Image 1 (cartoon, rainbow, N blue to C red):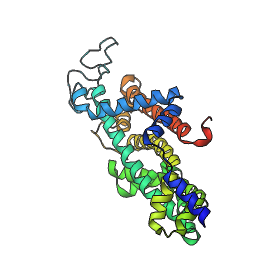
Image 2: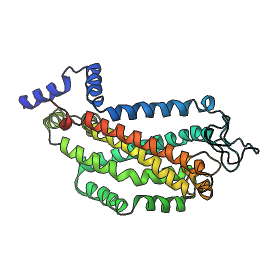
Image 3: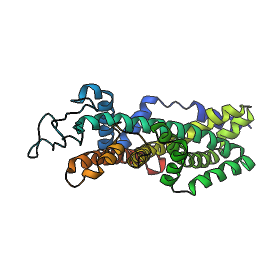
Image 4: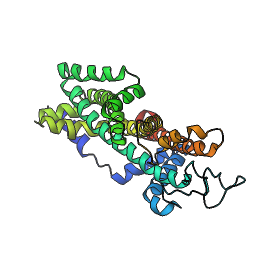
Amino acid sequence: MEEVLAASQEVDTRPVGRIALLQEFWSYFSENKGAVAGLFFFVAIIIIAILADFVAPHAPNEQFRNALLQPPFWVNGGSTDFLLGTDAVGRDILSRLIHGARFSLFIGCVVVSVSLVVGVILGLAAGYFRGRVDTFIMRIMDVVLAFPSLLLALVLVAILGPSLINAMIAIAIVQQPHYVRLTRAAVMSEMTKDYVTAARIIGVGRLRLMFITVLPNCMAPLIVQAALSFSSAILDAAALGFLGMGAQPPAPEWGTMLAEAREFILRAWWVVTFPGVAILTTVLAINVMGDGLRDALDPKLKRS
């Protein structure tokens, strides 16, 4: 008994400063130069999205009837008034891309937040209670995983109705099983450790044991999953927007911009290329950053 309580006290009271932890994290994270570049690019996207009203040269839905399908400024016929050209109704593509960053970040934040919170609660319940609760939750997750993610999202949006909010709800449901399974596995691993046994012996309540004692030690893989799911949410939302099931025109969402530009792909390449490049670079930056987070947070990948 005394040895278990001593082990619990040693784990809970060891003096580790937050600054030292941040320095250690940055030391491992900065070893991955691609992850650092992805982080700076992602921060730049956030700043641009926040300051979109001041950075964008024009309003996203402002139409210039004398500049329909005008090419980028470096192509013959282009103008510095529209650096990346205009679309079929004379809207500035650069301005729409800048404002579209708000949609992508908003979608990623909402989807990841909802999926993470609900997934953690279900995963904690499954890993802690086990038995019938575990079986019931995991069988539902298995059913969701049995469907292709984009197809299931399409079906859900078709039932709920095409809109950005319904698209986010559908994407959050599709991503749910990954958080549940990850949380469940981490909780089951932590429940066998001495500090959990010590907490039970000294009479820690069930909810406190789940959310205060066990959950913080399961957050590292969940943070990595959240970073990678952020990019998946952007991709899925763009796919739904391209299919007309996500954000609806004239919203400057990148997938919707691609859908509106399909018929001009051969004679106005810039209308399709730049939204696609925006999606590609943003998702790539987030994925590379997620790899860096995994390397920095996973003890098995740290060099001694």
